Length: 231
Image 1 (cartoon, rainbow, N blue to C red):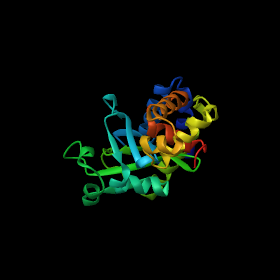
Image 2 (image 1 turned 30 degrees about the vertical axis):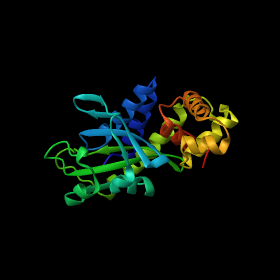
Image 3 (image 1 turned 120 degrees about the horizontal axis):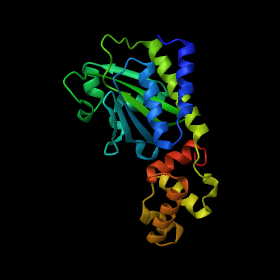
């Protein structure tokens, strides 16, 4: 089990990152230093559609971008449970097959997974998944508790290093559109209710995404939830 001193030492390494991509890499690199794991998938999470989106995968061979992985986590019970309870979760054997998708079974030796939610205050903004472990690794409640704590420390780190423009800078209309997206309204529904064109709605979305420094609608909604701008 990792000592308190070692844990804090490794957490401090996160501060060494100097840019966004390096921060993401460092989150997984420190995770792999601390825990008996052989890979680490990093996902962002948006409450809009319960969407999990791949960011990067780190293994001993290096880093791979996994932006093509997108899932409604409600179809993946182990991930949904970790997010809902804000706790690291583990499953193996037949439960692993039941609670995950075949896309996460990368080889015949893969038969277990751990999910670590990244918690910003009371909001889950992402999660880390591992499905390959060091031989003889013991995934018990003590380790899961440490993993839960790591997810919270990562959330604090991302809060401190966040240089995204203040979402309050969004115009009243931009913020209204983003709220309506969070409520599940379509572009047409928003246009009808707000008495503007669909093109104007799309323009508000585009400018809001740009101001927030995010990549798409779901990422924008997750950012606004994370900052408590919309609830």
